[in-house]
Image 1: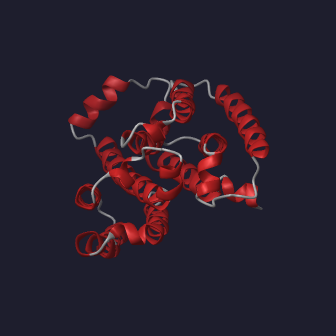
Image 2: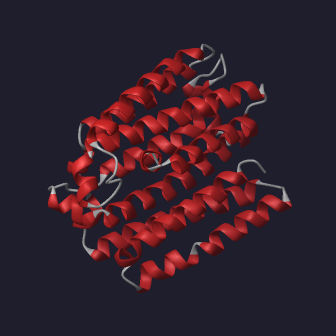
Amino acid sequence: MSILKSLRLLNALFVSMAVFAAYQKWISNSNALAVQLAVIVFFGVLFANALNNFLDYEVDIANQKFTKVTRKQRGWLARILGVISLLMIPTFSSGHLSTALYFLWFISVAYNLIQTKNKGWWGGILVSFSLAFSIMLPFWSKPNFSLSEFFQELLSHEKSKVEFAGFFLIIFSLSLMREYLKDIQDASGDQQHQKKTWAPLASNQVFKGVIFLLIVLLWLGFAHLFILEKSSLFKLVWVFLPAISFPLLLSNLKNDLRNQASFYQKYLKFYLFIGTVTLFL
């Protein structure tokens, strides 16, 4: 059970759900391809988590995380999931999707191997970008997909691309907030092993300012989608989502957010789940 918990299955499930929902929302094609893509992404995220667990063994032990999972178990799990996820990618031959999946796989490996925890603030940005980028994968599945045309359509306000930009902004902001809160939660072990994660090293004012900025970006994404969408149900959900983010905002402004990092990390997971579900609406 401990070894499964260490893989953060819920995190992988969120990402694969988002990819599946994005496929259903923006691409009119077979459900089989959507499921296949979601499964590949699911195993890819599990591999990234397993590799991170292996390389962060000492830090995790210091932070009392997944202590029952040995280094050897972590190593074998990372190898097995890495091979599975890598072998699954070539099953997609249409469009440029395989290239995009290889890109995400490479980013996952590079992120862990170059020890981004010693590189300050940009490690969280890289993870959050990769997560948000994953909802773009359905577009890559088109045989005639062109990245330059995609951005041209985005700039010309083509509806599906503009919607994608809104969801990208929301997922990126939520993920980055969670990454920084997770750094705070793991601060003692990181500092013990000289891991220079940005959040624990930043002053309280700077940390709160960054979280405030991310909340503003989050709300801009909400407002963006609210204006575009005609569905009353969808609008109701997107009114509800900003409303439940007020506790995070108030805590950020008035209290020491660091002391509540563990709670708000779980809070954001719930928030991310609700946001992912709205992709199906």
